[in-house]
Length: 340
Image 1 (tube, one colour):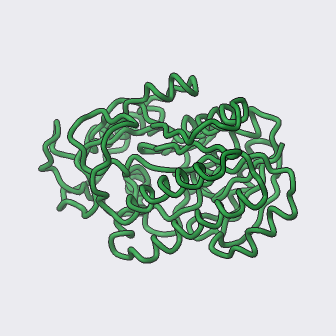
Image 2 (tube, one colour):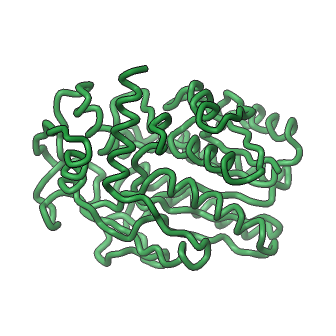
Image 3 (cartoon, helix red, strand yellow):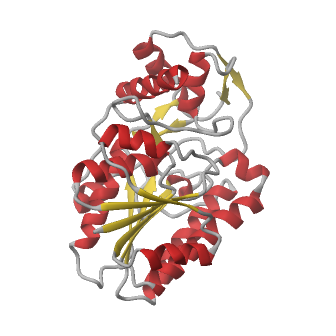
């Protein structure tokens, strides 16, 4: 069975590819334009798994090129759609780039899903769809607040697009997975988050500061109404996220065609502050981090963490990797990059 992964050279896409190769008999096909990744990721996947995959270098906004992939691979049974820009701050500074890329690429994937009758879709969504929400932890039925960034709004729109699309295509099925905060790297330390620009997420900032790539880490605000004044997030290991995608696709494959569009949170259910994350890194690495407290960053919400009961019930999934091991794997990856 062939599975198409868009953004397959990216952070979560590459770890999901590894998970699929190591735990199923599915064949992975990847699409990526390397706008925030590298073709070398496929070599790392092969080093870890011992297997190579078929991949295409193309932009999903090019419908004709995207359709050609489906014409060449007529037996694709599922699509896992990761490909999107994901930096909150960048989306605030350049909103049209995010609307153009994230929405048009999804639109073309949905067109292809219908045209080539691909029965199953997993859509990469985000906890950012909840906005600044008062009631924590958030459930899938929590009322969505106003999006705090154009990135978050593209995920809100994306879920609506998938929902409307599935309603008029009764033979097709979808699950939108709302990730909380993926961090860490493969346990081997041979694959992790590879940003072609300055990192936008906390953990790469931490590890790059610790290794000396960056002089200092800025903590964006310490005056939030939280336990230590810094933002609270639900950090989850990327391999746990990857495992959830395999279970979600298996769920769709094993359920009848009239199954509706499901929305499922992926998180640990535990809120961790920025300072607690820094402390965990310092403990496992033995490195004292150089950081300062700065102003709040536009687009950030104060606190968010998941109610993950639906994932447990439907997918039989829970996160397994601790915060300390998340930080340790991220540090191993940063050290690997420094040596290579």
